[in-house]
Length: 261
Image 1: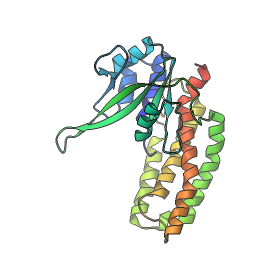
Image 2 (image 1 turned 30 degrees about the vertical axis):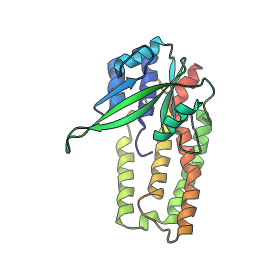
Image 3 (image 1 turned 120 degrees about the vertical axis):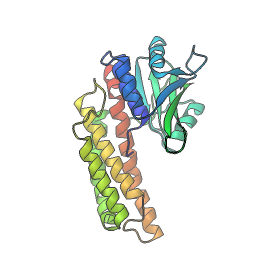
Image 4 (image 1 turned 30 degrees about the horizontal axis):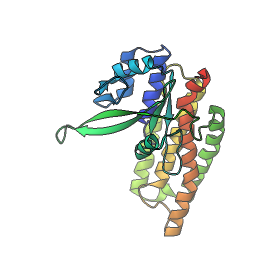
């Protein structure tokens, strides 16, 4: 979770658009980000893929009142409600957007195109039917914030115990990159207009915890010198990563929960 999921950008700015807080052009620009283009395929009433501006308008016309994020991984279908076909597609890429007001879900497919040295990214959102049911394991914003405070302490303790900072130049470079990213993000708009300050705070902290987990869990063995210690590291980090993902989902979905749609 070192970068913002595309489903998060789509849900956040889509919610701001549905609430009338941003223009369609501004919403699409924010969702696309550094990608070349986003299209939506399988939208009811549209026989071919359509651009994101038209897609968001069509979703509103179909009765969509809000967009929720799902960030599932194998064994933890976070934010999903079925059916199995949609869950399987979402689990494959570990993210999805679920519509409120219409039984539809969107799963991104990332494609690279262009010659070597000039590759650009295109995203196709596949629109699929979903089951109208409560999403799996999504906490309230307050619950997520409380869990994150403890998770951050746990992640820091794990990093210290593993002596990641003393494990060589690769780990040191990763730590420097994390600190630079944290500094660069200060003062930037983390969520779209309409989100409460608490949601921004929770999302920032969730991303920080996720970055620490990624740092401790990848790129070398850190201070672990045996297979048993490496296994222990994975076990220790798993609940911390789970908490960070749950908090991200709670932050992105907070405006939908607040409106009660």
